[in-house]
Image 1 (cartoon, rainbow, N blue to C red):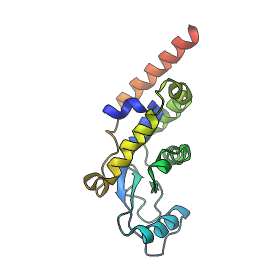
Image 2 (cartoon, rainbow, N blue to C red):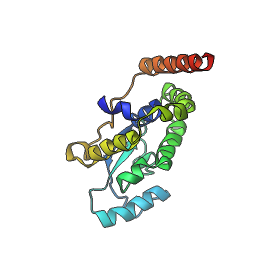
Image 3 (cartoon, helix red, strand yellow):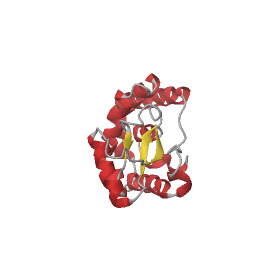
Image 4 (cartoon, rainbow, N blue to C red):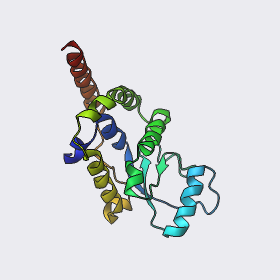
Length: 172
């Protein structure tokens, strides 16, 4: 997609594992800190609290809300700690495919190098696009992928490409 150029491959793959979601309260039965926080925020924002959820375990986590995130602002969505929480979920998620986990781990090691090559402000632009998608009714209300999911073959090809580029950089 056209906004892939704004972030590192690791960030792109990570956000390809998410889909938009609409918060539904557990009516006070929330057990996790994230769910309790979201319940509290939902009281103040009404019923249209939009967020992102893991597309792999979404069917499994209706009660516990693991893998669901409700950033209150665009700035919080773009915060490094938000991405780190999503990354840790994907690595631990039992429903996330092994190939995706391995690709995330591999691309995570190249993240700093790729980040240095990005244009200033590009990450902010990417998260602005994601935030806008979350706010659009056709994207926010249903469960729509944040970006087009990558297949295992594409992930493997990207890993090989980056390892080859890294090796070329080290040998130069």
